[in-house]
Image (cartoon, rainbow, N blue to C red; front, side, top):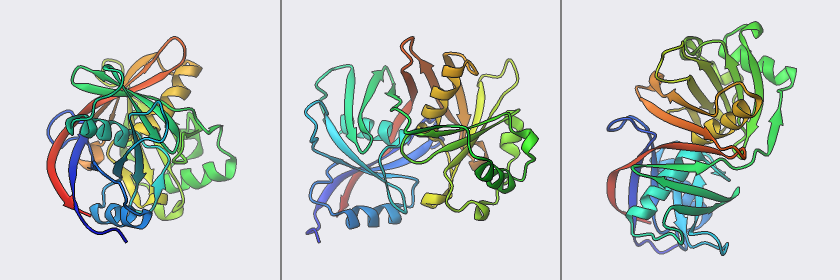
Length: 282
């Protein structure tokens, strides 16, 4: 067990459109010498969708290494913790090798983060699983969502580490109306996306449910939006640049911007604002 000491600690509001409107992430800016068990215990205690720990890098090209924990376990990658931890690292005096980009090392490898004025964006990592869902899993999800199979426009594995799958529904209204019974899919990491009508400021509405890691619904999910962005832009189902709204059913107002470069790289952009700054004894 580590001898407790004072460490820098911040809480960052990610993908926010105003104060306390996004998804918070807790960041311990010096996770050196903490055990896996100590990191997991804090993540259970904060009870946020993710708690992260910044460590010295082991890869020569990285600026820092990040470990990401949910209340139940560790993830190789997650989106809003990537942006929130980058903001915390910069605020804590971190200096990247390249002035315009930060390189994060995590379980999924190296992830590039760009600084764009007041926002940050990360390059979506490669998907480790893609393709249509099998009929049995699709049936379990539609049953949990309480919808008929014919309301599913498309479905896909969009797994870049956490295990995500997604269902595309005809409209944002149908996504917002979902009242899922997550007891029917306790091991799932699944989302639903649907289009807003023409003229709406956002192209899509997203909701993400993660009962597998004890997060019933995530207010704003960068990793899901990253992989869904890769899927939709590569198939022509979405333009190369669009915005997603998320969190309305949880009283949030998150804004996530997706941009696909000509070479296929997908960037996930959003605000990341520090709301709490202090110390923690670990």
